[in-house]
Length: 327
Image: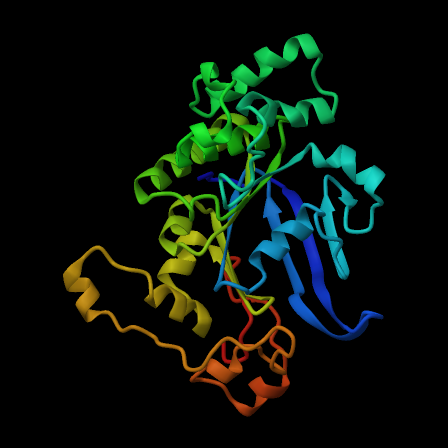
């Protein structure tokens, strides 16, 4: 992790991504899924911002909007000084070489019919960054960078182990020398013994290449290890953002406290003394989210105001941002 974060590399403001629900032959719109609902945050240069929350809270959708794999319903995403949320496709393509992504499934994200060398080298060919006679050497360099033997370039994905496939995915993400990489749960499909190796590799690459990560995950202990700051999402909205150490030692939002109470502690004595916070009810549907604070139906501290007034992120000190009326 980095001690300093000198400047903003990406700024997301009031980002919304609503997917229409249609019905019938005429595809009449009958509703919408509010996957991301008015999200704002910044990512600083050469830092790792962890993005956590329950499944379905909008983490992956946020990452895809940042990469412009989805065109946001509204809001802005400033990257390298330009609002990419409104740019036409032909203007986004030159910017895409500066953004990489590492997918959750290290097998499903690789073309099973292509060789490993072709997979890693395709971004270089697409963006015209290398001459054909230089391609082999450049791909071999990428393989060595992520800990793969260049002699494996002629193999196809099924001939690799899970960890090797994820290293191949990382090599592809690094091909165009990006400044920002969106890591979409890059270790959740791997064996526990391999997860630490991939995390260590990501940290080494960040130090060596000056990378910036948006690290999307649900493994809170791993997020604590790799992240400089952590953002917590619930039902399409940010509820808390703080430095990693501050968030884990002093969580303020009731939802963050509940999440952290579920993280296993390796000390049996401490685990016995710890109070587990069990949330009542189920996560509401993003098709019809609650009014006011989205978390109020499951919050023990909810008041009448929580049902009517939406809390916005505010700084309570030292850059610790929290969206809660009671704080």
